[in-house]
Amino acid sequence: MKVLVIMGSPRKGNTYRAAEQIREILQSYGPVEFEYLWLRDENLGYCRGCITCIVKGEEHCPVKDAAPSIEQKMRDADGVIFASPVYGMNVSGLFKVFVDRFSYIFHRPRFFDKKALILTTTGAVGISEVIQYLRLVAQVWGFEVAGEAGLIVPIGKTPEYRQRENDEICRRAAALFHAALVSPGRKSPHLKDVIIFHAQRGSFGALQEQAPVDYGYWKKQGWLEPGVRYFVKVPVNPLFTAIGLVVEYMARRQIRKDYPTD
Image 1 (cartoon, one colour):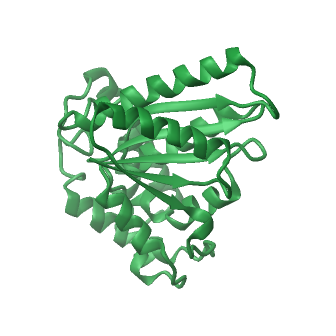
Image 2: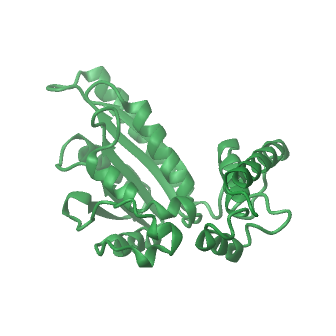
């Protein structure tokens, strides 16, 4: 079992120590290979906003850096820990550069056989905002989010009660993550996952001319075929499907309004 930690902190501080605590818990269950990918050490360029990766494909991106090898590391792992401290009520700049650099995956998701754990630390506030953002990124990229840990680590000496709370948060998150890693297949999607699928299906299915790479990708995956209700073949709550189909219709109608045909 292989776990990749994408570390958005520039130093070995609270977020790293929390990741190490989770590593120790996971390894108490059995053998787990841990690899840290320190974004501070990676040659990862800024997204230029040229949308070449969207229009022509990511292989045509003018930024030549470590992005392909980083994506391969995510593909090779069984699970990925998205780890960032709270900086200015959001992820660190390092982590935001990482997310922006892989913008094309929001259009062409691909990590449906991977599990994710969300990890963040803060001195006081911002946990919910960062967890919400990281969860959304992981979900849209295709990961099954199987654990979340947000730790408050005050500056200076951490009170004993707070340390006990943080220990329990790490223990629960690691247990959920491990259970997902050893479980075959994938759980049924939540409502938000189904809405994301149908919103994208309605959009990309109507953008054959404007976004041929996205359309071709979705077509190749079989996601545009009639009756497909989610990215992978798992049971989907019928109510979620009904809501998703309404969202899909609205997305398709909006696309046709924004991109009228002659």
